[in-house]
Image 1 (cartoon, rainbow, N blue to C red):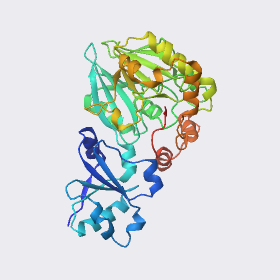
Image 2 (image 1 turned 135 degrees about the vertical axis):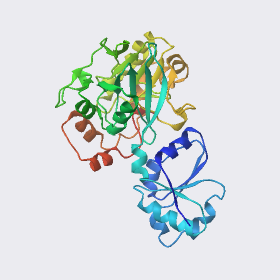
Image 3 (image 1 turned 45 degrees about the horizontal axis):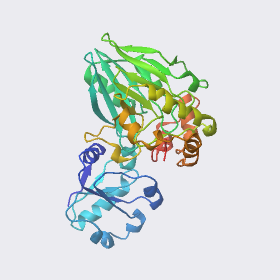
Image 4 (image 1 turned 90 degrees about the vertical axis):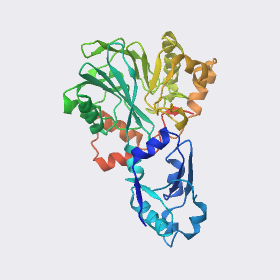
Length: 375
């Protein structure tokens, strides 16, 4: 019997298309409970690999006969062995190539829309981690916003479009994932922009990204307008692009709002968060399409796999934008915080240039779910 291989890209397509998939996850129960592959029509069985060393006979009747079955582990090896045992028992199964490590690193580009003067904007969905990054393209030039450490994906995508990367931005100093901004700027000679209030301790050169600053991409004048919006961090900066899109960073998500505590400053920054969401954003057009830097849950994905919503819709539906009482808001964002991201202090240090962990260590630091939002 042959064992099939399924890639992270193929699983992502099943998530986007809302297809059925049965996942047999053979990691330890605590790892599975903390973080797993999610899909609207996915079903799960978690049986640790060590419980299957004597065979798979006891789980055969728990596996469906009429659904695709995917065996998942941390790095691939255990899932291959379990898939082979299931195959020998007569089942048709696949294993996830590269395991959860590969799932954590997969980026799926989705075109968001066209810009007024011939450009376009793409969203890169990091499906296993909930991170969202962006590429704004115009007349042979491109800017990248909130990139992940998997820099080759952006470089190859820009090459495929035959455009030159001229600007790289981070909306804030990230604490849940390692930014690829500095590396992309070094490889392409692009200008690297950071909010100066988040960059006081960085060890490398950058251009200060300040409120009201306009950066033009291409000679068709696609304007990226910086909007200071503190609250998640003291420097958090949003972008209004082409008077059509609002890149909200980690201040505002589709179903929640940003957490203010990842620099240990929740009590100090909660007022900034309220000011940004309830005053600065309120002055913007409700027709702007919000493009956040993260998503929390799989049901925030649109039918094409993208994550976006009109600002006006979020003011109508997002609970975090509808708390009239200041004390109630303060209580919500300081008392409803999920656990802090794994290794978030080390990630911050890395993004400042104070640490240079090797690739395997960077993977370890990022493993786990996205935790940038107030629940």
